[in-house]
Image 1 (cartoon, one colour):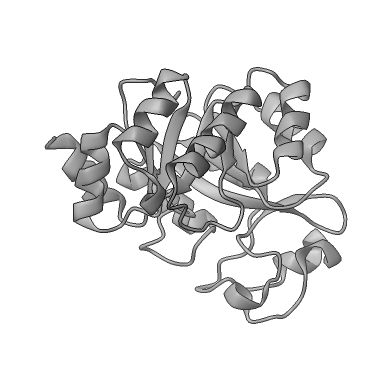
Image 2 (cartoon, helix red, strand yellow):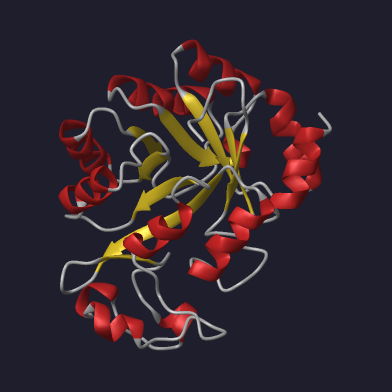
Amino acid sequence: MDGKSNQILIIGHRGAYKYPPENTLKSFQKAIELGADFTEFDIHLSKDGEIVIMHDEDTSRTTGVKSLIKNMTLKELKELDCGNGERIPTLHELIKIAKGKIGLLCEIKAKGLENKLVEILTANNIIESTIIDSFYIDELLNIQQLEPNLKLGLVLPKDESFVPEWDQRKEMIDTVINSNLSYILTRFNNINPKFIKYSHDNDIKVIVYPVNAKMLMKRFINMGVDGMIVNDILKAKKLLNNH
């Protein structure tokens, strides 16, 4: 679970996205059962300072109740139903079921939670099996100062768009290099062999998302990416094992 250079990590998208509800303990448990190397998830801060897991900053899409996470206490958030009776999990709850079984790819979606995040990861002794990623470079650099041993990745470009020109793609990778981060995460259509080579030549690992079609999975396995964020964990594992 430490992201070794000779291993392509199969990373479950928001748990096991194929088996909803997303970003819930049920989905994370399914990702463990299916044998994902890591699970990807998103974190926000509640009104009373608890780190909770949800993709959106607004609770409406997944719970049907329109509100901002930052305006709700943990108790209020726990009253919401994410589907099938599943509740919004805390980071503590995820770690309890994940530690020693699956790595964590934790995306920071809110500002001001770096200290609390590092404190939780350190207290649970899971620094080695965790990768922190974000669009927010300042938050990543803060974490770098707090815990230099944490592996960090920048999601680029911030608007998740297709970047057609190589010079712009190179600039993305250079940002990661110059910030002394370990990973770059970008959409599948930004990655080609030149992107992989330039990243690897500069000791930067590449995680690609979303990778769901069988053809894309094969393409990126052949290219030698370091990780694929997938909805179908079993399909990706089968293709990788047969490679």
